[in-house]
Amino acid sequence: MGKQWLKPFGAVLVASSLLAGGSAWVAPGNYAYAAEVQGVQQNVINVVGKGEIQVKPDIAYLSIGVNSKAETAASAQKANAAKIQKVTNLLKNTWKISADDIQTSQFYVQPNYTYSEKDGQKVKGYTAHHTLTVTYRDMDKIGDLLDAASQEGANTIENVRFTVENPEKYESEVIAKAVANADVKAGAIAKAVKRELGTVLSVSQPDANVPVFYASEQTAKAQVMSDSKASTQIEAGQVKVSTVLNITYEMK
Image 1 (cartoon, one colour):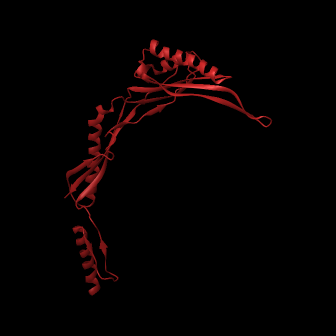
Image 2 (cartoon, rainbow, N blue to C red; image 1 turned 120 degrees about the vertical axis):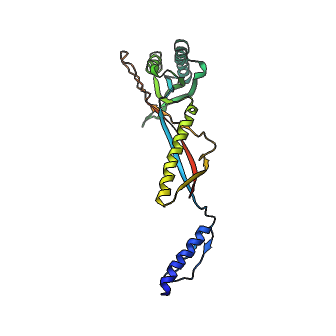
Image 3 (cartoon, one colour; image 1 turned 60 degrees about the vertical axis):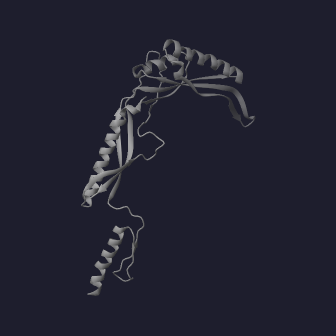
């Protein structure tokens, strides 16, 4: 009889202490329970809400480069400078791209090495490399621009990165989706534990140092055709704009 009574008593005692956020102790035995909980926040549900939309990109970043090889570093650099100047003039004068949208992202001159058992490692000429990152906003003409740059001397087309220039204009939509997602999660949790969902107590960003929204960059490799009759086809696709919110709800 005593053991049958002690088990529920111990369970009730521990549960009462947990709800109070304190500690409980019951004498040891087969049916005794002991628990200690500090600072437990009661009657709340914490969830992470995620909002995401797919949008058509409106800006692209093109990596357009030029390589030149020569016997000396100076001659390689000189030849490459002439090529990159032709490409830059094409971008500015023919394609009317602002100088602010043309930026050097990589530049180097390095030796080329050969190796043989007889002579070991030796320098055999130099390679000069210069890459421009071009900001471009006409999504339908990217392929034509890359073809023109290639014909003008650009021999390294590395990639095309797509994004949206002003993701903040999608802020309200992605936040609304994140809150709706959190509502569904919190409601399901409350129902599962046979409680009711109350009001929102707090909303926060995981990282206050970054925007509540962002645009992830989608990358497309641009293969420039050697056949002059073929044109480069670039598909922009869609990019993701999303946000994550931490939301705390009251649980009734």
